[in-house]
Amino acid sequence: MPNNLESEKSKKLWGGIFEKTPPETIRKIIDSFSFDFRLANENFDVVLTHSIALSELGIIPKTEIAKMLSKKEKIISSVLSAEKSEFEDVHSALEFFISKEIGEKIGFNLRLGRSRNDEVITTVHLWVLRNFYSSLLPAIKKTAVSILESANRNFGIIIPLYTHLRQAQPILFSHLILGYLEGFIRCVERFRDTLKRFDVCHLGSGAGSGTGVKLDVEKMTKILGFSRISRNSIDSTSRRDILAELIFDFCMTAILFSKIAEDLIFLSADEIKFVELSEEICTGSSMMPQKKNPDVLELMRGKSARFVGFVSSILSLEKGLPSGYSKDLQEDKIILFEAWDEIKNLLTLAESVFDGIYGRHGKISPHTLATDFAETLSLSKKIDYRTAHKITGKELKEKGTIPQEISYEDSIKRKVTPQSTNPNLVKKKLKLYRNIIEDLFKDISRFLEKFSEENFNARVKKYLG
Image: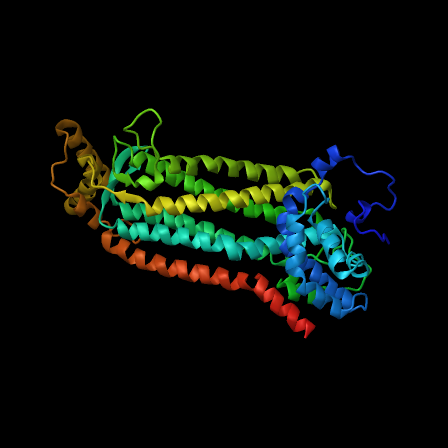
């Protein structure tokens, strides 16, 4: 055992057969501490949980675990403030500072029965679940509420629905916004379903074949908050499909935002003007004084391209890898963290957009009422719709207008199907979506709260007595 904790070798978790290690130029490329330091808090909790299992085997005194917990804040602070070139990864940094605070006898024994392979995947799963609860979930809910409030605020405004970028039929602007909300709710439901697949503890998998140390993996699983133990150690340490699924969910959310942005850019154009954008989501031109550019919307649309890249990267990363851990998988965290930060940025942009859009009564083509006339003609005259369609089309071609006076208000009121733009139905949907949002986020919050740091600490303290 090294007796000089500050030595370079003591900061590595390997090296027994090595006389030489990679030079600094190579280490800058292969070391991961510059980005995986973000896992420090969750990694500490995984290490602490593993130490509890070791204490039950008489390897680490229970009193030392209490000491480790009491110094948690100081240890993590030391990790986060360490030079990024000083350590290979967050795992070696944590072990170094634990050894420094608690003693080498404890710190250097923490690796018994555990590999970085099972440590890192368990840590990443805990990081995703915990940070989704504390950071992403509130931002996602704020965006959902912002969309709903925008639909409420704009109720009564009639605009044309465009198909093939041509005016098609009158709709409530609120109905269009609720269409966005329906798509966003599906995104949230995808998150809910994917997060449940993160609810697995991989400790005990070791480097890929398990361990001969008789760890109480079930107890570790419960302390960390996970519902079940992984069923196969090779699958645990060499697959990243669940991360890919989460990043795909981010991508689908970004694609929805891109579609919304494109709609609103078009509808707010000077030549269209069915939507007014607040100044808070626009910028000006350095040359043209009159310009009011929809920069927030354009960036919301543009950033979605990055998510297509993230999905491609995570899928390409795992494609072709053999079973068992490969160093390639270190790159997964770069992709995850970048995607995580960008989805938070997109949620901020989306919330500001829906807080700053206002529908306007613009010029709707009377031709958008043609379908209403054809349907009325078919039902009242008892003629087939194909004939009614031809009659209406002929009137439009010869006279440029439909023969019956129908208002845009009449058009939306005559829609009777449950998912239509009828104002009474849209009003009911506004109330329905409020309940859907509350129930959905309560469901996700209830699932995620067990992974919070507060609940983890409570479980550890209960064990320590």
